[in-house]
Image 1 (tube, rainbow, N blue to C red):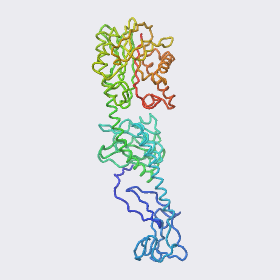
Image 2: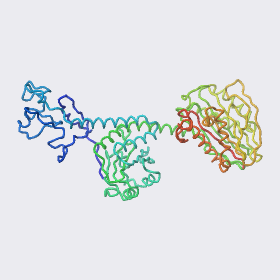
Image 3: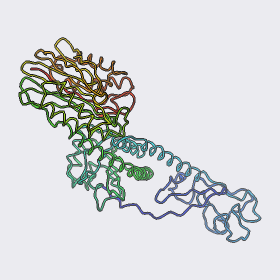
Image 4: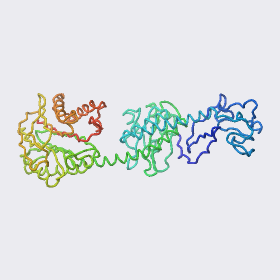
Length: 557
């Protein structure tokens, strides 16, 4: 087990060029591939493969100087052992040779120099390709995946493991490449005093790198780590920290080989340079992720933290919010237990700063959503048995206190024992009633969104559900995931509910999950990409999601 101190910042001397005046410049600490030596000679020996013979009739300057060496491409010879092109020994000396020499006396650039330059250019091209890929990564997850994959390619490793530093210190949940969930869980059991990742995340005395030829046989490592290395087939290991001067340690990454191995000097240096570029980019992604999580926590705090338990009624809800940087509004759901034992169910959406508001108004819409939902709860307690009155009062409040905003909503008053439902909607998608025979819309009368007209009014709808039926309320964002238009999306959503397996239809929680998954699959099919509802970019066919996905389901027992 080897820990390396931070690299030195001293610069290397510049190598003299050949006859053409071309010089190969090594950045500080960046060693290019050395010229290969002939068979039987170690690298850096007296005879390099790039040496050209002295032309017939020419002068062997090194022989005259008694140096006993042959000029190479890296150290071109000159009179008296001085480099060619200098004025030493001849006032008229130039970069093309000394005065009086024929052109044949100049030593051409050797193949060793060419190989060195070609190798250097190849290294820089590879590093540029991987850093460009890193710069194009969107989001924290994509950035971490890029670091794992690029480091593995630069080092020629087989597997990789990365953790980010938690705000209070210590590693976060690991991310792996070539390691399954069980392997990652096993590696999390390594005690901190034995963990290589913990060493790379130290605030002080942090090593510049760690490496081991064979983890399972390394006596400098802890017993638990050696045991897991043997079980998981981990051989050689090389690790680097990702840190900046301003933020300190941000993450630590380990690359593994499937057998005993040591990374080459070129691979180590390329990986180190890559991590120096990746660290500040990762810092920005971590900051953005922190802001996003904080905002999302505040936003979820505006919604119910739990649903009420009511005899005769099972409730379930799902929310997949769009980011506030992309959202054009903010949706709500609520289940309000009323004093007489009935329940008020509602979903709705508040748009930004008026019709056509863009993503920049989303934070204000989220705050307005919280105020509108709080007001609706108060109106429901006062006159919840009359959905038209509840929405009418809400519309008056919206016009008075939020004149630049509009909202769509549906409110249902539910009597669980009689399974009777009275509801009204304001410019909102019609609810779906899932029965043992399929699914059908509960058609509400056509009406404008709240805040759009001088006076809002619409009749209510009343019906009685059968035992085992499930009422599904949803917002427009979910319907649009199901089709290219709102009308097509609503029809496909109803069909997805009707086609759900029976054991799913009778469980409101599983039904919500089924509809969300179906929405993701529909959107992915239209866009031609894998479906993943956890990544809201996959929830729509046209790029990042701009609408929340909201579901509230109530099953009559």
